[in-house]
Image 1 (cartoon, rainbow, N blue to C red):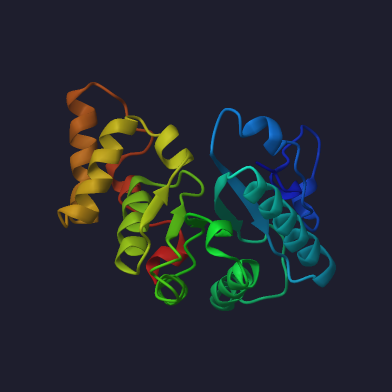
Image 2 (image 1 turned 30 degrees about the vertical axis):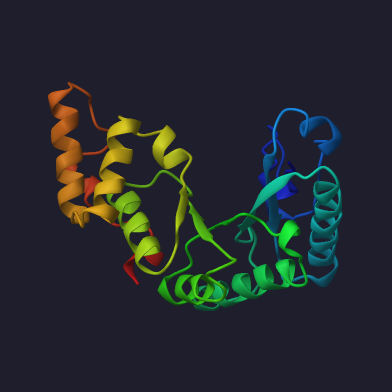
Length: 229
């Protein structure tokens, strides 16, 4: 339903190097005729003026969404710029921003679920246990990474309380998206080890004569530091 400036990727542009600003082009009066669920996105940057603008934009959206009985889920990105914060404190900050954003909402205003980056075990568990009856925490996939990254992310996030996974590039850019999703489910539902899942993924690709993007040894690596915690 909106796209904050930190996800503007115009050619020869460089918006991600500046503080994120809110922007919305979709009109609920029109959209609500065809759908009753949409994504609203926010990015906080530890700047009172820009963060206030984000919160006000979200408030205005909720007012309009309530008018048209339109449901939404809330995405909160990590800041794209250096905000002078240690990585081990970022999860605390993002969690507090989320609670600030949804504080004071009535039941009909609440997001159906969240879509956030995985910021480590402590941050995920803290948010997932904050109000589990009313606040469903989901994770976004981020960059493609390795297949091991994908399986580790879904396993760790699920273990620490996430209940929804919304992976874009990790699935869309996979050699076999359907196979990948099946193995993701096996990792969290059947306790398949992540290393074994990667090996099985490569074995099945080989049977289908599909060339993997990475060698097995490379695809077994964890490349995202947050997944090593």
